[in-house]
Length: 253
Image 1: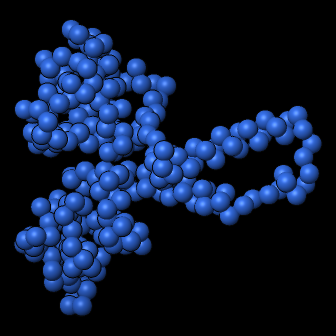
Image 2 (image 1 turned 120 degrees about the vertical axis):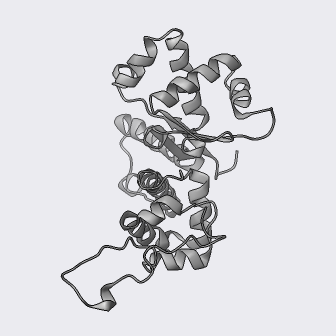
Image 3 (image 1 turned 90 degrees about the vertical axis):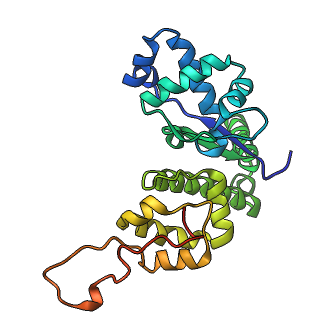
């Protein structure tokens, strides 16, 4: 198994089964089955940040999902309908569903981080029973530092995914965030998120799967900042002349 492999999981809060939406689903006919299907879909979408995407292996996405989670087509269809009604799933299109609470429930860990975690656990167990030399117990190698760095990067990505998904309509997954970072660098994420917070235009139009360098530079520079009329100022330099511009073809959805 390669050192870059990652493991994903979902984290269930202790109040999961007493949430109003879950309790309401459970009281319906076949409610327990629909909750099981919901959990299976959460697990299935863990490595995509909540996205379920049609892969053209069957006639439609629901048929693919029913095969993947080993549940009847009709049951999956009914489960998705009730999950949509409870605002637990968003039907972006016939080819893409999004589990709204997944970003806050998904955790991940690189293979290297898992090995280090197990190694540290084993080391702590040994230290309970064996007195080790000071220069051994205090050893902190460059490899340890790199693994800790990987863990921090994973944590930062999870925070970015959660923050961006709270701002925009087009949902962002782990893969689309990785593509963005590889292309534009992580240093452009913070100013871009800052601009999205202040721009209704960006919230409704930015698509992380289809961006150009020109669009990113203009967004970060404030071109798409929401215009706010301020009667207290007559300084033309403070007026955003780009407010209310039409969508730029090829840059946004």
